Image: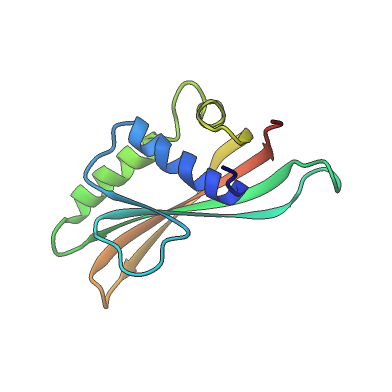
Length: 143
């Protein structure tokens, strides 16, 4: 079975969270449409460009990870505590890129680093959200 690079990135990012022992959140990939059970972590990714020059097969990608929880159920301290657990999953030994490469059957991860963190408060739905932006450089594994 073949999967797209984007789908494999999302799968491995969510797997890193589960491997780190983060519990109590629902996990969703970018192909998920419709409502989601709160609290949740939603991973999406896209290929930005081919790295170095055309036809190298090494792609520069961006992944976005959004953690969302209800503000009327969890206070800011609880929300931030869970977010820190999620963020710590990306600072492990072996490195995130090594961990994702060994778990993946179809993608080699050369670089995987947290690029940005963005807080969001959504009033109509009374939710807290924070995004983690991860920059990656990947290629398909030769089979």
